[in-house]
Length: 265
Image 1 (cartoon, helix red, strand yellow):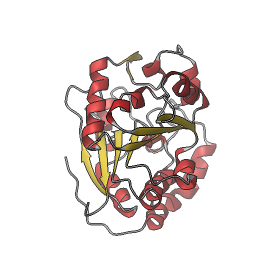
Image 2: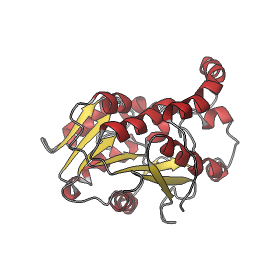
Image 3: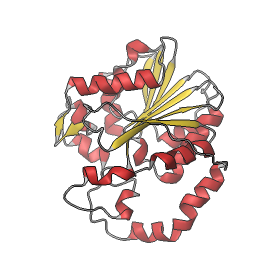
Image 4: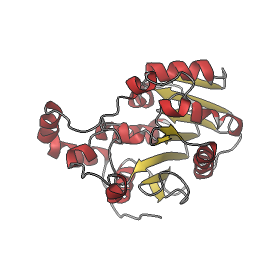
């Protein structure tokens, strides 16, 4: 599935259009109690066994970890979308506990994972790091892409199952910084985004409020329309192609992926 938009705008205009007009709403919204499940990634990760890697990052179905075949589907989607090569150096933003990252080690020359959760980074550094080529850092995704000085070595970027948990303004600024500060990055793969057009395929027993669907702290995070993501990508200097996972992927009925490339590449 490819989505084509003819939209020319700047990142700042995009942020203003999608956040300032809701500023009063969002301030009020955050003061109100949230009567829906919240993500709380740190607490959840600590609540399961230290070696329950897929449970820690909620790569589960009905609370049980997905099987190896599902993980291989994810890895194949990543390597294909990024056209991953042995000489690539990957930046894995919001990498979680590093379990998924580790599947890419033999497919690239190096990988740096960045994760905001102290516990998940502890797991990643303890169980998956292979210094100096495959390493993990404790940091916020936006802070890292804005402040990291050594950006020239990265050639590909992965954000899997996490972008929907970025605040909307942060999401725009992350894409903008990747475009402007990481000159050698040719592709970005953003995987497992919840598709707002397919909400009813996930919520079968209730109808979520608009506030929940737009809340990065909600259990599923922000739900995006593919064409909305295309617009955001173009506003930050990227060309986006949206795609779906194979039908046998456990979340294919309500999620989609996005591959970003530099225009004209």
